[in-house]
Amino acid sequence: MHLPGLARLLLFLSFTALVGCSLNLPEILSRSSTPISTQKGSPASYSGGGYYKDDGPPSETVDIARIPDAVPQDAPRSRTGNNPYEVFGKRYVPIESAHGFEQTGYASWYGKKFHGKRTSSGEPYDMFAMTAAHPTLPLPTWIRVFNHENQRAVVVKVNDRGPFLRERIVDLSYAAATKLDIVRKGTAHVTITAVFPEGGTAGNYQDNASIQYLVQVGAFSKQTNAVSLRLDLANLGLQLYPRSSSETHDGLFVVSIGPFDSRDEAEIIQKTILASIGKRGIIKVHQ
Image 1 (cartoon, rainbow, N blue to C red):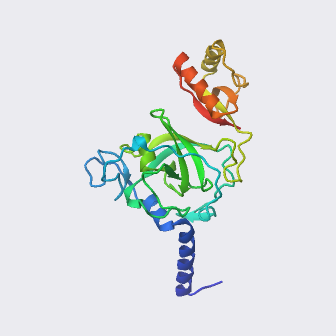
Image 2: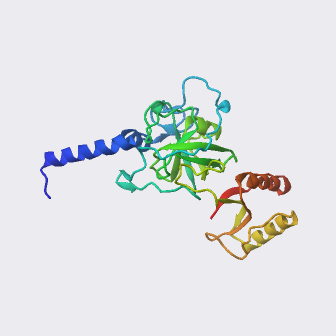
Image 3: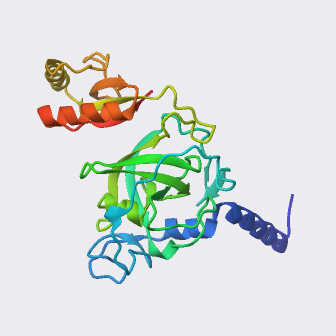
């Protein structure tokens, strides 16, 4: 169907208004299309750190350490933000369930520029709350964010959409980024894992009854290193995940302990391994 120029413009504006209403698209585009400032001494920099232009940390001093992590809850899906949408010509389809979800990539953060503005879920963005934005996780979803660069971890509530640039997988609130020591640098290499309330169903659309956990202690390109580590762990009397040392996963020889029925069990083993052989290990959802 051929439309006159004015009709096409009106149709585009109507579509943009409709999508923006459900996803707060103008804020998403602003947050995603503005480059990160990392030049020391620039007006948009913070002690040489990186964040979005015209954004940044709060002007007042807040004791972030006293802000508790988000607590996973049984909650219904948000009325907005869970439908397919398009940003920068790419279509995003939110997933139906976060069951077993885990992803590794880079985290960034957003702060005072968006404080008080509406998120994709309809909630106001609070830079002092433990929240995050993700392109496709159901809203809301609670995730554990593990910073590989300093071994810190926090739990946040995903209530917004983004980020959409480079290999970034999650946008953190100022509070969450501060706890993970990401604010000054701007980004960090992280792994995010969906977490659920004990005995809950996470909004009656995700079932965590069968979720188990592994502690991945190492991943090697050489099989001999994997065999050596498995022997060290076996000598500690730990329950090796029944995967042969000759079997590869994504091209690497992976050594894991488990599976465990709860994250608490996995964290106990994680601490045991660290104390015994100096390796922390990464907790992963067993699929």
